[in-house]
Length: 187
Image (cartoon, rainbow, N blue to C red; front, top):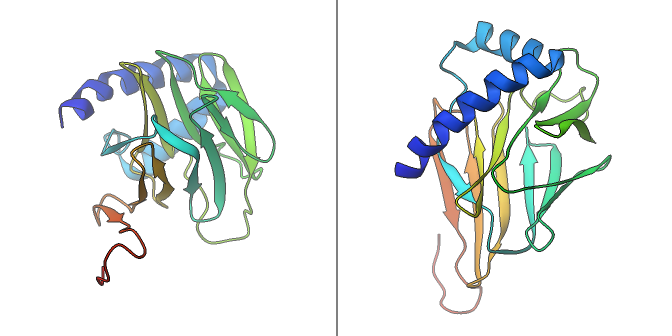
């Protein structure tokens, strides 16, 4: 909870800056908050994606995969890769017009990172998720998107993980994967 409280003002500052800097972000933010409410975009529960074994798979809207490589501090999609840099915030979403491109907005610019199939029912939200670099760690959070996120990977302990972010009305769910042959137990 303490980390959530620390990241919320950072998110608010980033959204204010990006609204001024990028007309496409302002359009996406405005249309999303008109539809879902001004308080709908916020830090719900963050997941630490630093100190992980490459890659961490991030799926937005059930059909838009990205990979995060902690060894390179890099987020990659089918169109581009971006470096995840210290003390920066990255907001992932789509433009208001459905051009089938997932965009990452940051202080470095607006980057089309991957394509998504706009014919499917569950596509990424206009303001979907954020990646924060805070206190030397990298955190992913779904910002209350209407279509959710899935993260899958393994920490350096090693400890495999799957995190499922459903819509906030349902709550945030996490699944822990037990080692396959360590003990036979139904999850």
